[in-house]
Length: 165
Ligand SMILES: Cc1cc2nc3c(=O)[nH]c(=O)nc-3n(C[C@H](O)[C@H](O)[C@H](O)COP(=O)(O)O)c2cc1C
Image 1 (tube, rainbow, N blue to C red):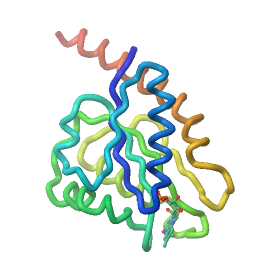
Image 2 (cartoon, protein in one colour; image 1 turned 60 degrees about the vertical axis):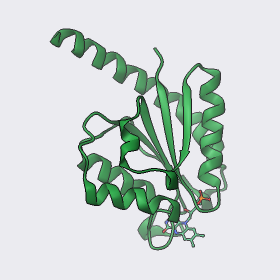
Image 3 (cartoon, rainbow, N blue to C red; image 1 turned 45 degrees about the vertical axis):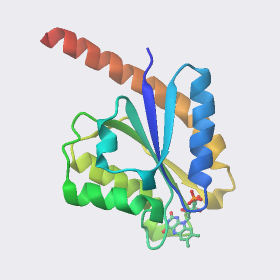
Image 4 (spheres, rainbow, N blue to C red; image 1 turned 90 degrees about the vertical axis):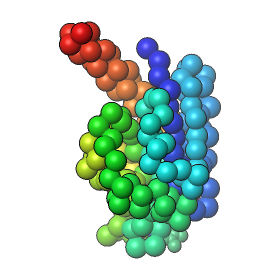
């Protein structure tokens, strides 16, 4: 089974972009079409696209989303579109030195997407910059299990659709 993946990147210094590139390389090799987009080009209509979504974002300020993600995040909070058709995953980059707001950028997106009816696939991947591991390496390993969960989800929905029609 295969699907399209839309990666939405929120970043300040480009690390989340590196993570997205690594995932794109891996999944392209597995025949999964990946489309990576910087969040500053986007509005909530991006969620009308075909496929599954991956929020890949860091955290700044006092647990805020990065500057290039602010417009999209705020538009979701104010426009509150129905996203019940959306399936998504989250890769949240942060640093445990900021103990009170660890990975809040990704967690904030997860919260608003959940409130708007979207369904997360799998757990959030949390990366701690103070741990000394490279987020792109961790993500490359983590994405394999996440893709399996996506395939299971698609299979389950196909069975449900067939039963309803
Ligand atoms: C000024 C500043 C503020 C930050 N604030 C937080 C924070 O509140 N919580 C957190 O988990 N990480 C925080 N971080 C860590 C970044 O999210 C982390 O280093 C991330 O890997 C950066 O990725 P990027 O290059 O894609 O923006 C902060 C980093 C900086 C430089």
